[in-house]
Amino acid sequence: MLIAERRRRLLERVRDQGYVSFRELAEVLGISESTVRRDLRSMVADGLLAATRGGVGPLPAMAPAAPRAPSSTPAEPVESPPPASADGATIDAVRAEREAIAAHAAGLVVPGSAVLLGPGRTTTALARRLTTIGHLTVVTNSIPVTQELIGTPQIDVVLVGGALRRSIGAMVGPITEQVLQGLRGAQVFLSGDGVTTERGLTTPNVFAAATDQAMMAAGKQVVVLADHTKIGHDTMCQTVPSDRIDVLVTDDAADPDMVRRLRAEGIDVQIA
Image 1 (cartoon, helix red, strand yellow):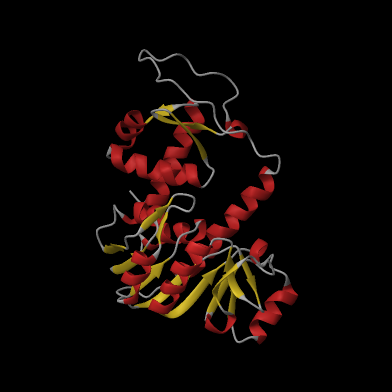
Image 2 (image 1 turned 60 degrees about the vertical axis):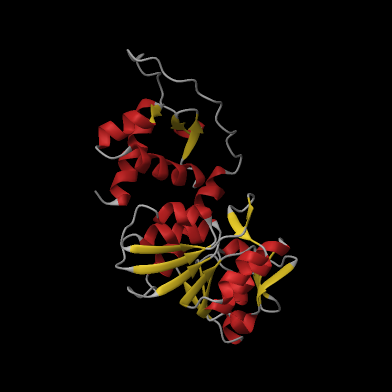
């Protein structure tokens, strides 16, 4: 079963029943419980489902109209779901844009090559897309990226060690940077919090910035993934200067003037 079809069925099952345990989902879909857990972690991270104790539940906006009939097996305790966003439509739109950017970026990857993926929601979405490509070697310091690829045998994953920075789910620091100095890849895919003509890609975290700079140095081609909310935005730490960005993949809501200025800097801006 393809990953997209599997996750569609997972989502439909949860929406229909309101709460489903990992074990029940595994039995219904005929897959392992570990695969269910991995898929659900990604879907929770993408805001499609709410995590509960022992399973998952729908977000408040997708809750079923009527409660389901009680099961003969007592349900495990359910934690309260996170509060719904007041700007859910905007969040959904940005999430869709990230997925479109990831799909476009996946088309840039050559089967059989070695690529580097930095941390971030868009690079994690890209990792999910890479599971449909032929043999690859993926070097990453991101735990979520690793989780997306762990069940794909045709992809060799090199997880770079270091100090875990929990806020971004990635390894950073001197150990990470030192290991990256000995590696090379055809492409490096990086995300951040802002992209400007003056400073290129930036992030507010000094530790993440230093590690991303080491990843940049390890890639022959630097590809930046940034949705329109980051175009024209500047943050504290420079990760990739403008003259080192080869390709910028963004969405069609990006400011046209900023896109024009970035292209004038010699950056190949591609619209997903």
